[in-house]
Length: 326
Picture 1 (cartoon, helix red, strand yellow):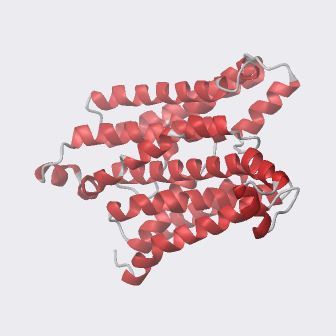
Picture 2 (picture 1 turned 180 degrees about the vertical axis):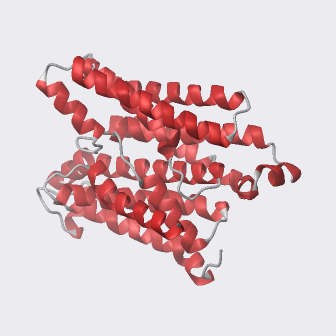
Picture 3 (picture 1 turned 30 degrees about the vertical axis):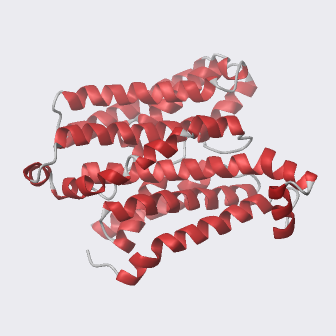
């Protein structure tokens, strides 16, 4: 794939500048608009009202959006390297569906009203149970095709569990509403406790960068990577686990947010090429900027849910990719 070297050099700085600009917009836009001067005063604590708005309300949502975007984008990058397919995404193996099922069960049983920790914990448990099912299959030496088929079946099964719980065990209107809003994805009312839950994303993402060269070799094919000294089976299990951790943590604090892991890594490959040591940091920054931009759209369009915004962008993009590749 031929790429413009100039674009490759400026891609990461441009993404960082864009992320900073979106972060400032996120801090300033809301029921009470804050200019740059008041944002700066609020960050320093010299304006009490602005400081309360920024540090207690907008900053946790901002940081949560950055973590969710970085996690989903990095997870999509891993899946595309694993399956050697630029249309792969984090939802292929049922991890997102597992998180959704766990969260829906927690809400329907009333656990989410007991403590703020129960809902994300249930989502993480559901995601890791889905991962365990996939890893059991992978440990038995399953091919990539069998893993994909297992992911399709697991997604269908977990979707049925979610639908059944939604229809049978939630007679209370407020719980039904909470489930539907969670399934549509969003970052409303995020607090520093949610950020704390998602903080392992930073460590998980940091583990990706040293794997850049091995991911490059894996993209060439299993036999080629094996001949060049890569323990392919171990690398694949590690990548699956890392992708699932990233997806589970993102799902736990934002609900179901689709297409981020498809759009961002795919566009970046077109712009800067397939080298993963370059793609990993760029995917983290660009993914964070993308979700932050979508969250701003959600906040300024009458409360349209984040998952709806990403789907409205990602759906046509995916159809365009399919048409382009046929």
